Image 1 (cartoon, rainbow, N blue to C red):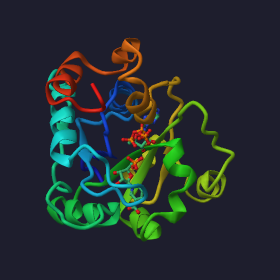
Image 2: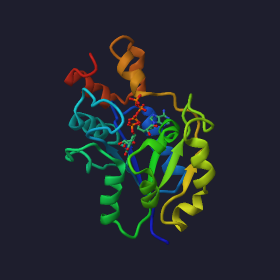
Image 3: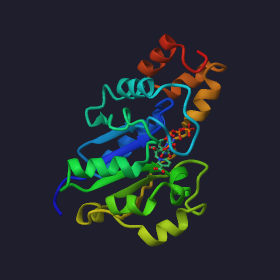
Image 4: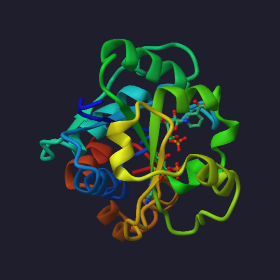
Length: 211
Ligand SMILES: Nc1ncnc2c1ncn2[C@@H]1O[C@H](COP(=O)(O)OP(=O)(O)OP(=O)(O)O)[C@@H](O)[C@H]1O
Ligand SMILES: O=C(O)c1ccc[n+]([C@@H]2O[C@H](COP(=O)([O-])O)[C@@H](O)[C@H]2O)c1
């Protein structure tokens, strides 16, 4: 297989923060991708529906990546009125790009419970996983050790194999967390530094997160 890998970074992005952007940049640089598509979910499968609509979360993604030529908004989940199962999105993307391998980008917290995801084995039939390390989440906990033992691979395999490889990156710590941003933003102005100025301006304009 010689076709270019398509990188997809799914998230609730409630809101998108600099940790997300740092992960996407790191993946772009270290996995030699041409682009990463940031895909906000409409109805996150494993958590309560966010108070901020998917349209607003997608708008924040758009604002955050405006100066990032290799990042694009992938809007396919936004209008699907069902839980945003990753397997469904990957099936759609595979139909659109049958000859290109797909790589779904997640953080270590997501890998730790990946075996609870809807049809997780099918996800690994459709795509590779690129996993960013995250402070506070070790590769020794939850589902991560078993998954890495079975599926771990190297960068080259992401393009020589069609799917089913988990690549664990050695990225530095990116401390940002959306939960922390949501909780602290109305209380502590220093938290604004975790967001891009354009996202912060939008949050103020729309009076999101108690701002
Ligand atoms: N700082 C980070 N380092 C590594 N991975 C991250 C980081 N922040 C988010 N991710 C990953 O990005 C993806 C989307 O994250 P999400 O939108 O849920 O943000 P979050 O900061 O984890 O939000 P929340 O605190 O609401 O769970 C997930 O796979 C998550 O693991
Ligand atoms: O498909 C699933 O069962 C599933 C379960 C949990 C998370 N996901 C996806 O993983 C991405 C990160 O999720 P989250 O909740 O950390 O923002 C996002 O694209 C979710 O739709 C997907």
